[in-house]
Length: 523
Image 1 (cartoon, helix red, strand yellow):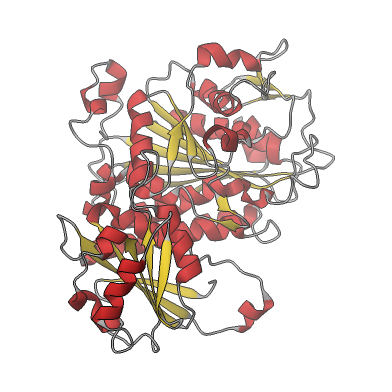
Image 2 (image 1 turned 45 degrees about the vertical axis):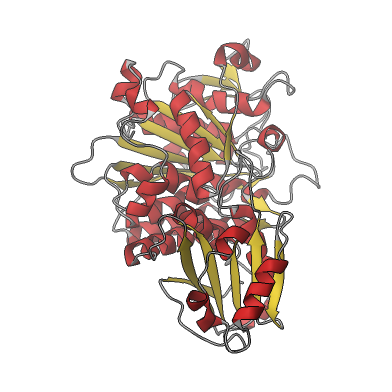
């Protein structure tokens, strides 16, 4: 999969299955709407119309099913016929799974995705997740030839027109963003330390003609970034705050995406065990998703100011490592008594969101992070956990998750009941809760919000992606599609406009409070 070139085409062209293996995938009722003339060029002469129709009749998805059409060269696969209200209508997770398991091998292959127009974006992102880039298998390094997978969409339903060229470019950019995020998360820390991550940020900046702002090492300490500096100061490669800024003419609001970029998390002196530390290369998943989404979003055209803020550090053990009982002053000016060095993500993000507010004057701040192991308990392995000071944006995140395939579900937002978990006799707060059985994921997010202030007049959204960031031992690139869909209304791209849950006249736009009128112009 590492050397696969993924191409989205209006028409993949005709070819016999033995020359170009093909997978046709869709919900059974959608597959049955496909006209034989639309598909025969990819199946004949090996597969006749009668065989195609017999295969469709034989499919019995529970929740999925597949049927070989011709040896191992052609397959048709059915998605679930129905999904629950908390799943994506696109069945994105099943799309990825079927592509991984049913796509025939070969150097030149084709996927025909049959779906309604509203599911095109989510389906394309799901397909891209099946083709991770990073690999250090010796056999992979010896292969020089690139494998090609061409994806064609057959759109059925009321809006059954072909996918246009501009829409295909959006799908391609989104897929590149998903695969970039997954590659960074899959890469181990000996190849993805803070230096390397900054190189990734600079590379994206160069492609977009944006020069990043970078504050690093001792300069972080001098400027008051006690969270990022305190977490990363013991590492060989120093911590950093990096910012990519897109500031188009005519922008009417400022949006900041803040990503947790812990390139490796040992837990610090509150060290993780031998079974819980492996996989902690993935603790940069939030920053990786924001980098992939920023690249794709700006390429598609974005009307408002958009800042991507990366909080980068390695939570290492060493003579200068932060100790439990240390007290740090964060960029907010608030003091934090450290009672758990393994609760480090909230420290770096607190600096990041306050920087977005104070220095970037952001109206809307979204932070994304692999923040808590409790996220999997709260919302499971497939749904990100959302905590926000806005009921409208909470609902929008859920809708964006369904339209993008990056599912999301709300956490309890109740600082008056939960923030007392961080009470300290010596500082403004501790960094870890007193009672680990009291809404852990909500509390962790509230720690970040506390540094903005619970009376901050803007929109703040916290997205915990600890479990959706990977499936098994592979990264998913989770978060890229969610961000692109959630903020799609501010895009110049028509496809992103369609999948965005936010639009003029929505409930958020009609809210009469000063905060919701002044600060939520995106909607």
